Length: 161
Ligand code: HEC
Image (cartoon, rainbow, N blue to C red):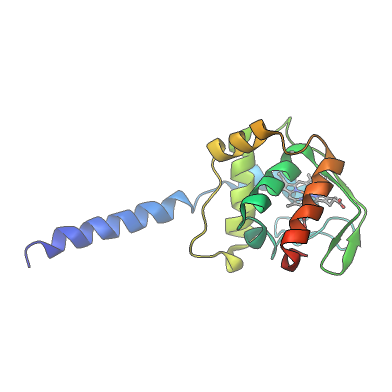
């Protein structure tokens, strides 16, 4: 009996700590994104695609994570189709503004806050080390290359359309 209490305290503490580590991406890092995708991530029909409702499922695969880092770092140049809606937009590269930590923070906000309702219990947040490793691999130099990554991603995971 005497052993139970310390154990439950340890479990409780670790639950709080692990919750806290993925509960705090700053809204500030998402401010630039919100200029186009809106603070809610719902976008503007036909101009800026919605990212709400999509981020958690894209971030669930290794290829999706690479794609998301590439979009923010190198931009995206369509045409793309999101759901049923065609987009011919250009997302400018944000890599000169965000370092790896900033990309990680903005993406965590987009997944955990904007797309909170689709968050899986096994969600692993981005961190600067993962983002830097992806950047070092050089997945995309520009918006057209990112569009190719998107095409490959959708071929493998058609439900992400
Ligand atoms: C100047 C406007 C602008 C800003 C700033 C911007 N985006 Fe975008 N974003 C776009 C446009 C436009 C597209 C679609 C491009 C196309 O049609 O090919 C897009 C596409 C995306 C996609 C791809 C969605 C999909 O379905 O594949 C993601 C993810 C994304 N943006 C996230 C972000 C994040 C995160 C930020 C902030 C770090 C950001 N965007 C900043 C305009 C912007």
